[in-house]
Length: 253
Length: 282
Image 1: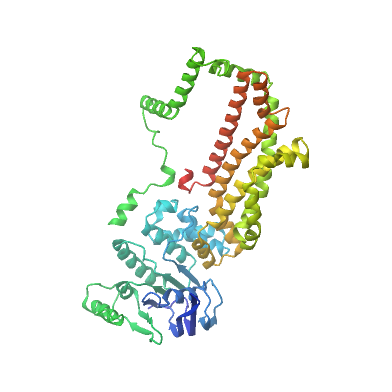
Image 2: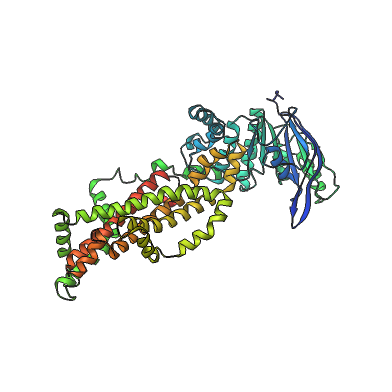
């Protein structure tokens, strides 16, 4: 693997709880985790296991109650330029064209419009939407809109790409082609990828390691190395065995 | 496969609305006249029916004069210049009040839509003012400001303020918080978020307020000119009726209708230019 731009994440003693109906509900309990620079870590877990919360803390959109997250040794406070988030919904600004939306992240970070658009065009082409640069979001299909969201995140050239169930709202066919696209982008862009999903097959297809968050109190966090050559073949017997292993973890097999 | 199919059938904005350019002249003419007929046929029918009914004596032509008599009165008033002074003063009253309402309501609405504390504090009194008819308050404004221009402009301003203010507030509040969070995730600060996400997101709703406001302004213009004025189109409607100059009365009414249509059309064009992205505006 080529050396990545950086993006070693150290998570220590991280905890977070929410007040629900007057009761404190702990979703993360003293989590320790190291994410290696350049790897693809996929987080799975039952709903309520705190996987999205963990990703939002990494993004700086939410504050932890205790513990710390450091990137390349530096403790993070809030959002940062070395990270970019891809949400479950494309979250495109409807009044901007595809080009405007993709350049938005750079412009917000103070890059001049012309330069931002130049870089945006490169990533629009990378996700295969060059012909649609001048289209407005309402003219795009769900899969195309999500690819615009991906291009927007790539354009700021983050060290760490945080993906919150990015393909969760897509139909099955589009989803598979987008998984292939994400795998390609990850290997080409040399970026550390942390992704939340509830699709186990998606996790095995993309992950170097799969992190399984426990749901119940006192349950242990599990990490599974996915040792398969890329590009991966879903029907291959070892792929299927990983899938069975994950299903067992969820008590479904 | 699905994806590719979708991509091929998506239309890009720039290419829309040009379907007529390559057609032969005759077909183009037929299609254009068909479109005009389907759009204005009923209107023309209505005017023809009015004309026939009034000139053939089905209705009392002293009360409902034929269309050509009204047009003649209108022509005389406009070309002769007797109505121009009334139009000017009416436009001045409504324009001044509308502009003042825009200047006050939009900035205030943008703040109120974002600052919960300000909105909570101002909402009850706004609801009270809004539910109190501006016309009921007109005598109060006359007592405070006299029977001159100030009270007229103020009552129009007052009534126009609320649709503008309330639509601006709801426009700001209805901006998708997920878009705001997206901007925040890319490091946007409050002012950038306001400028690049909240403001453009609120524009369609602000335009709803502007169009409602324009209608309200014209309504209150007429009412205030009917109650205490010696000039203005609203005054002319009333005055012509007193003096039994019925064609002149209808001419003034036609001018009022035209003003409303023009104001609305100007706002529609402006909205289309500013909100090309918005489906409901196109």
